Length: 295
Figure 1 (cartoon, one colour):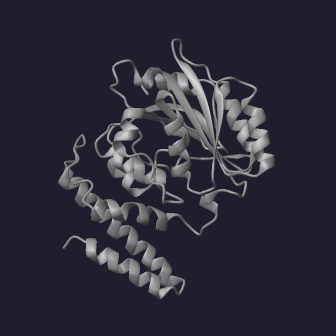
Figure 2 (spheres, rainbow, N blue to C red):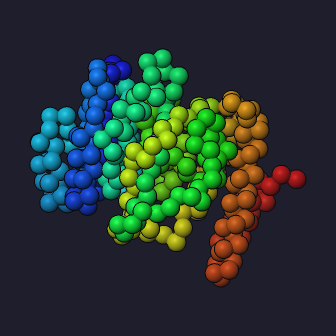
């Protein structure tokens, strides 16, 4: 089935937290959609309770642009988002986590940035970070936000999934989100995209990222660096970056940079494990670091 180049498909992965999800839904359906474009909203429910599902059904019935897709619970955000892409009609994809929101002009600005000639195929926006009702300063965030983001993206995930607009063809060519990662599935996908693709950026706070409400995956564990390592290691081991071409990093250089980053992350993580008395774990990560340390 062909996908419409004039349709934006907004995808919200959901598991429980109906109050927050209703807020996210409202922020999508309140978007100022550019003239000549249509908007559809897909809420992909990852096996929530009957009570939550009934509230989601009620929410989508309020607007014909909304659809609810229910899948058996898997707990993997990448898999849930991928199911939404599979059901979407649009050639333009945008993702929104169920606890975040968009400002009304978010999609309008990004569609304008992408333009009709497809020179920009992935973009993100500035975020406002809200924790426990208070805005968190981002003054310490020092990284590139547009253009060639591969090197910065290796260090950490600098593209928030709730900020992204991406052409469906690019998303599918990259293979979508990994479905076996509970955390850092976005970090992994952006590496596969940014090694060859320049990223557009709307320097306006058009996305609100909320934290501190207790049921977030990133707050369930001590830290997420172990998940970034789990995401990066297979890419390095398979030589995924060797044939890539970026703006100023050839494939071989990109692969070497990824190897160095993996080794450094493993050494830092191993040091932390040793400090906490987890020596077996430390040895595993030290072995990975030794394998990928450039002599």
